[in-house]
Amino acid sequence: MKTILLTAFGKFGNYPVNSTELVARKLSNSVMSGHRIRSFVFPCEIPHVNRGLTLMWECAQHREIVGIISLGLASDKKGLCIETCAHNLIRSKYCSWIPEGTRVDSLLPYGEELLLDLAPWNLHRFCQRAQANQIPVEFSEEPGGFCCNHLMFQVRSAQIQYGFFSKVPFVYIHTPCSQESVPDMHEFVAQGKTIMSVDTVIQALALLLAD
Image (cartoon, rainbow, N blue to C red; front, side, top):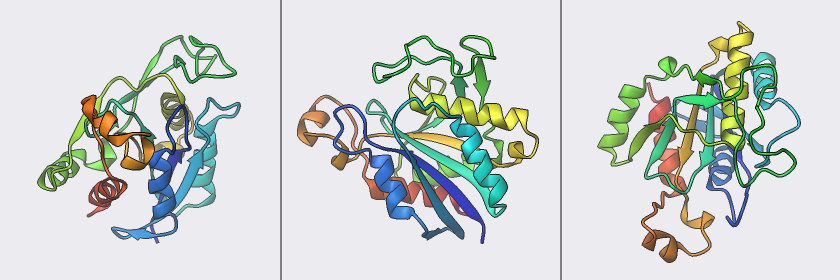
């Protein structure tokens, strides 16, 4: 069966839980829109290893994987946010062992932008389906500077460097917080921020993968 590698991150900062991890755990080994979901949850930190190569190795070992969907949590998002690029730059208050201003890849130019190849996903159709189901979707050129951008940059670099890997479609989607991921939902909403349920994110993923 065709398989999707779904990645998410664990908790970080003051968030009780990362809602993307809840999505990944709930979908693990399930079947969605004709695809088996293989979940992969990373610690929410800048890694010592190349996670892009880790995912590409998974794809090489399991040829039934036909795409990678990566999820990240961003409390400022008003809807599902499809990232269009990644930058060779680490800048986040959540960085621990590595200083801000460090390059993701020391061999590539500081701050270099890599455009993600989103063509295989038919995102126009997805946006139409999401709109029909009242699920807000937006696009972003600002992926941040923490582990989400780090993963995007490493995956895209691996796609560019290794021919086989470029054939595995990759998309990165930031999600708003779910109710479970905020300490006080009422205070959070009062600040003008958006809550999106885990089930809504799952519904959106089903729409993305539907024929």
